[in-house]
Amino acid sequence: MPEELLRVSKIKKGTVIDHITHGYALDILKILGITGRESSGVITIAINVPSKKYGIKDIVKVEGRELKAEEVDKIALLAPHATINIIRNYKVVEKQRVKLPAVIRGIVKCANPSCISNSGEPIQPTFYVEREEPLRLRCHYCGRIMEREDVMRRF
Ligand code: CTP
Ligand code: ZN
Image (cartoon, rainbow, N blue to C red; front, side):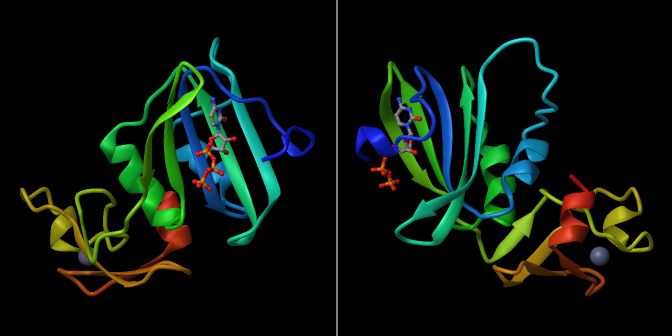
């Protein structure tokens, strides 16, 4: 990207979550447990950035932190086109397209309180991805349909 179009600075080390579906940047922060009251580490949020591929996109940059696999899986639920870039010494050392599997296990709980997966039995919540965007999941045990908002409330 030409320098005059660079909207936010490059980071030295950490993670850049790029190609976030527009409108979802703040939800990504919530997933990562970022409240805005952290005592260190620059966090950059860019919303409505023009993008060749998707029209407009959001970007989140988190200095000094590399994401855990579980966090990447949660991001995939809300932003299935996101790219996770790991930065070390200003260079992109790893680029990972998030991928939503056909079956989601253990990441999100069923919204139905009487679902067997909420009964205290050792049963892993399991959902089928019926649609990626807008998100639609179906519980393997009780058939409850979960949409994006239901999933967000349970993170
Ligand atoms: N980036 C950053 N700090 C760095 C290096 C890269 O903030 N030290 C950001 C870039 O601004 C970009 C993202 O990380 O938003 C990915 O960087 P790069 O792979 O260089 O960009 P593209 O080739 O445009 O990525 P893609 O092919 O995934 O669209
Ligand atoms: Zn259920």
